[in-house]
Length: 574
Image 1 (cartoon, rainbow, N blue to C red):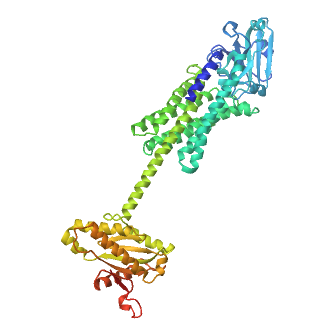
Image 2 (image 1 turned 180 degrees about the vertical axis):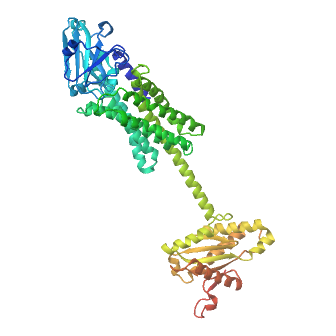
Image 3 (image 1 turned 90 degrees about the vertical axis):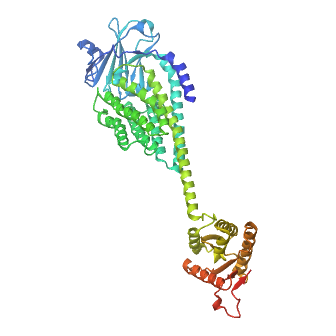
């Protein structure tokens, strides 16, 4: 909605100002050495090339002849506008009907100071501010020293000077707002990347940086904050930022879409084609070695393969069931369409409408916002998948550590708890509890009743503050906590006697089908810090069998055969 309102505001503000008259089809060119003046050029009778080869010129100084047809131009002062990339010194001359010449000379810094939004310059035509003089101008001659790109000639226009000046501030504000809107997702990405570490967030952040840099530079905002920036530097920033943005977007596409939704061969194709604009910039963009007629065409043409591959990749991912790709379809499809139009204009297939360049800026910024929403959605899905995976892992862990019948800890979790006790020493005794004559319960009342007894016993043991586990059949274990009760006389026997009495009562009340009491035999062993599970279990198991051999329904906590008359008997019945 914000972008739509901004675009409407731009339409209302800027359409009245579009009084430019393109000169691409009517201008003529020639070249000379850099010390030739306009009067010398005209006196020499040098011919100007107006054919289709007029842009194939050489020489340190290029001259452009523009017919000045007053009836086709807006009223008021007129200026020459064009692409400012890579320019240095310039001259603008007006030749009147009597042969008189009016001249303005501009250093590179003056050309920079005359910047117009969207990477253009605006140099006043001498005499055009005076209606009488303006009507007498026959031709305009523009001298460009050491041009580097064909666009410096191809995009020359005549425009209303005051309207262009008036639109400089609102358009600059518009571009600044667009940059600010794009930076917000960048802050969001960087903030959450530190916590989540999803690689596609980093690549999206790099895409945003490239987009903002390109918009900041090509729109002319760079001259507001950095007025000393050379036009060659601006040219390099323009071309490299867009090329880098395309390269990064290829990596982002592969990283962002769900795994397996883009075939490996297509991923490699995306990487290769996304690097083509950077390769062309590195090989063909002139910096300090003169004018190139083909650099701009090569640069624009280098975008075609990646555009086509991206379109195919989006269809490919949709057919494979990707959901994340829909955000890229929404964000990138309009850019690809506008980009192909710009490629066609950049390769001189047709002149087109310059207004579409402004549309491309809006689309680039809206793409960052759409993909920011996509990134947020993707993060949400990944978090949901992570939570689902973690939940399944917890469930599997519980299944692995839980006895299926009683839903209490099993032998695996019991052994792990005993191992951890060697470090924190929470438990002082281990007790093995066995249900007396449990086979007789199964034989007499059936396995369903027997299972119910096991469930009741397991639930009661699990409700104590000790660590309870079922280790097999009718055998249960208790790791008894190391609390202050252990200092009391017969601590484990008394505590286990109370527990067994509770078990007998619980089984009697909850399994009324069993007529006789269900009793329990218990063997207990103390746990020292260095004791192994095997040794402690062997001791407790030996005492359990002692309890069974001595009549069952009792707790044995010392070896009865070793007991002395002066000591406790080592068993407790209940």
